[in-house]
Length: 250
Image (cartoon, rainbow, N blue to C red; front, top):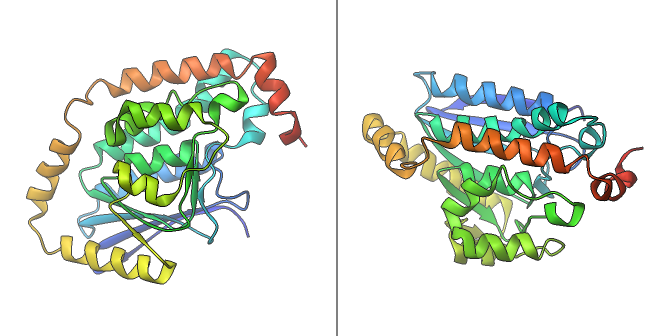
């Protein structure tokens, strides 16, 4: 299948879905499409609540595209590459509509950042998480603020340092990344639909003000995440990272 970003509106819920055949990794063009789709949904009066989901069964999001990462040739290109996730996280936190995450499978690297940038998240028992960045010579710098805000720096340090291990969905629920975990995708979809449609019957202005409360103290993130993208953009040029990513260059 070709990669895509789509949106459909059902009962005032905007279902935004992204897909890429490489385990839902996110190349730059998909990140931009997803960013713009969320902006448009935030401005669409037909939509009262947004659901963020991905296609396929096994992986919610494998993070940034390693193939594009390998192609980075200088610091400007590196910063631009990592600004993809930075801009998306900022758009999600600024969106005036609540964003519910529907996490059907594994989340890795930037995928964990997307999960943390939602306002409320439901998952299946298959939705384990991993921050693999240190193992390839960079770090989860761009996504750290969203992850730390959601689950705290202590849990972040566990994930970041144990960079080659997956942590279970129950671990993610215990730490507050997921609100609930379900045994099947069918059960997850029913719970997401029920919650989203219930929220559409609430006062949309109250939901908007509540979201502002959720993200208080993040007003400086535009500058912060841009600076973090610069750090990652420099590190991705290191010999260590180039060697670690060689196997993805074909």
